[in-house]
Image 1 (cartoon, rainbow, N blue to C red):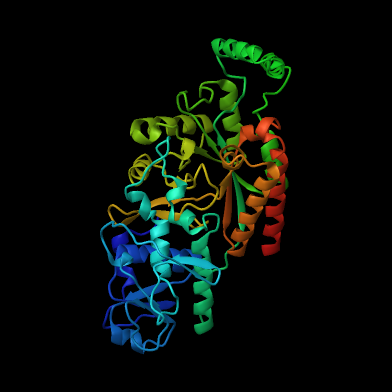
Image 2 (image 1 turned 30 degrees about the horizontal axis):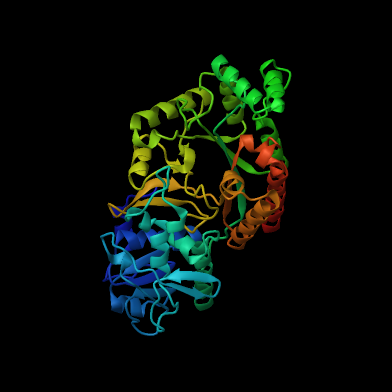
Length: 462
């Protein structure tokens, strides 16, 4: 488990009377939890560098090893990144939005020409990864979710690109050119296919009343294909069309793709339409998948407002699967910061995989790498780890109404960008997206094409 922030603060500071051997020494005018959190992510997670902070100008100046200053003014002739006030504040304030393009990047907070970068990379990173704007007053969508269109990433035009990772590459280039002795972390591209099981079956597990009602609806609409298929599935003459689990696992095994399944296990409601967790075939599917893949809970639509509901659904899945459940993705990606994430930690969830948008593909926090949730209301890093995803099949096919060719092109373009930064590329799929009917016709090929291309990119990096 990562050390508590108070400990980290103590460990990161270099005493004024002593210079220790560090990978990288940084002069700052003050130390804050926001600053440490940001440096830990960029320098530690992305670049793999150890660093220490000092406020002592003399000690910093005489240090002969790799170093840079992050301050309001350059001290001497050191590598210098000019700072704005964001990482040194304690409040949550409306932030001025001014974009600046530099190289292949877009950043916020332009600074003076004396800085070795024309914008504050660290402040830009913090406001995006902490989801600063989501704490401010904003208009939510009909499902009570933060809108992608209000995101600074979206407004700046790079929602689909892991911009913070590009910041990391630029910083690596600058530091590597100046300090040849620095040894950087070797990151590797990886594709992870995740699956939300919102509806395990199209016909099985429904009550007699539900099936009779569905039969007459199909009859009124002259949907004879549905009537025939329902009859054949219910009388076990055909496999349920949503039961695609074996096929999914076989494809992922073929291309050596990592998987994780999130099972909706809550009580049925108007928006949680899965079969009951007591339905034996569904329980058997969960048990079977859990022997071949990582599994997590798909907490139901209303779960985020009740600790008791969260705990019940987690316990149900643990009992059925026989494995300890530590990962979650919210149904409909419905959560509110910071309250929902505080609740997740209280019920024992250590990983959340909900960080994306239902209506737009791309990186909600501008990074493809996992990161620890920073509770901006308390100005402290937590132990809840956030795993962002890049795209979701329903976003492209249902929300954006794109065809298979355009959808596949978008996915492969984002994959290319993630490969450039050697990060993890996570996709969200649904078991009922492989039915090869309606809007899902051709999506089985999209899934395999993405897996095949990811496998090839992974081999190139080895």
